[in-house]
Length: 72
Image 1 (cartoon, rainbow, N blue to C red):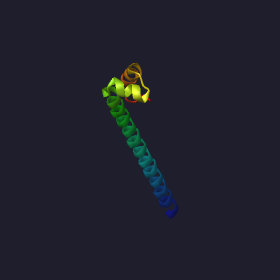
Image 2: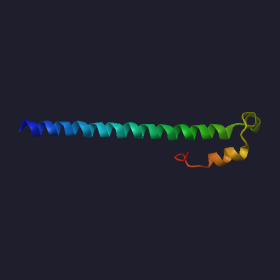
Image 3: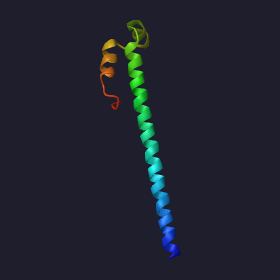
Image 4: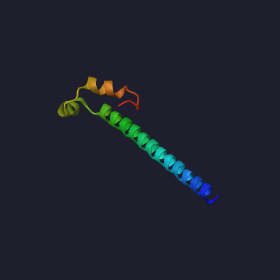
């Protein structure tokens, strides 16, 4: 009987570990999406002369801006 409860306890630890890893992965993905949206908005608001200075055209910015936040 003791062996059975040990196996159950070990199984619960693995399940908790998988859940924790999943939550960390989800948080990281949400963070990436938020940063991508923020960056695209910031770039979109820049004036053309600054875009020219950093070597990005307005057309490239607009192409990037219309992408959904989950697309890289």
